[in-house]
Amino acid sequence: MKVWSYLLFIGLFLWSVDGRAVIETYEFASAELEARYHRLSQELRCPKCQNQNIADSNAPIARDLRVVLHEQLESGASDDEILAFMVARYGEFVRYRPDVDRNTIWLWTAPVLLLGLGVVALGWHLRARRSGGQSPLTPAEQARVEALLKGSRN
Amino acid sequence: MRVSRFLPLLAFSMLAALLYKGLSIDPTELPAARLGQPFPEFIKIDLKSGREITTDAMMRRPALVNVWATWCYSCRLEHPYLLRLAQQGVPIYGLNYKDDPDKALGWLEQLGDPYQLNIVDIEGSLGLDLGVYGAPETYVIGADGRILHRHVGVLDETVFSRDFSRWFPNKASVSGGAIDEGSG
Image (spheres, rainbow over the protein chains, first blue to last red):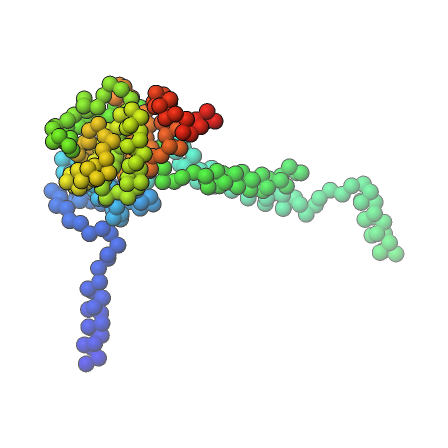
């Protein structure tokens, strides 16, 4: 009896489906095309509801772009051709991995630059701390230290 | 050694300046990828006449192309101003975007028709070629058929005098100084 209720409990979980993505069915000529569709639809950004890719977005424009993506894949367009088509219409904005150009150079290099800057700052800090213990005294301070030491010895 | 003490403050100021500038940027405003390029080729139906029209139907002088639809609430807000612009001699072409032609005809009958013609784009393919991502959008096309400017959102007097009036100098004189344009 207990076993059956456990099985039912587990069985109910098997019913649950991942409902996050937009539910749409497209027929693909091959599994490879389908894989490319999923990859590209996740890499293309929805122009209307920004910060969502076109795979996740319910906006009409995202649906239109998915239709176009499917059509172009089926008609044999390469990934580069499809991305060029989208960029010609919606700008570099539609790509989550934009090309390196004058505008995006900082986007691409910032992580490396900031990491380098961090390493330099850390090195600087560590070196300063290592030599910091023996900071040179001025002659007056030196004299005072010696006077104090002499005094304590007596 | 002295200078390095101010480095964190300097870094903070730069970051603050960067973020402050970010506050004044509207992230929903996309760069128009089609600026300077010819208006995309199309073969579509004109809404009122039912005739087939192509890119050639809308050339030879600077004009507006207004993307609109009956499902678009902001288009209704914008409509009276479009009627005024048309009265003042600004040629406006409509791009009826992903709409029901019957509803669109009803809209024009009820609210007035500022358009020289209306491209029926039921499936939104011309809109896609233009890079439209919502209605209303208004484009300026030059006498040579190139796209000179794009405005996303409601077009009104302020926007027109700021961004559009340089292509329509005659309109400014017709408007009769309803707004002061000399201040810019």
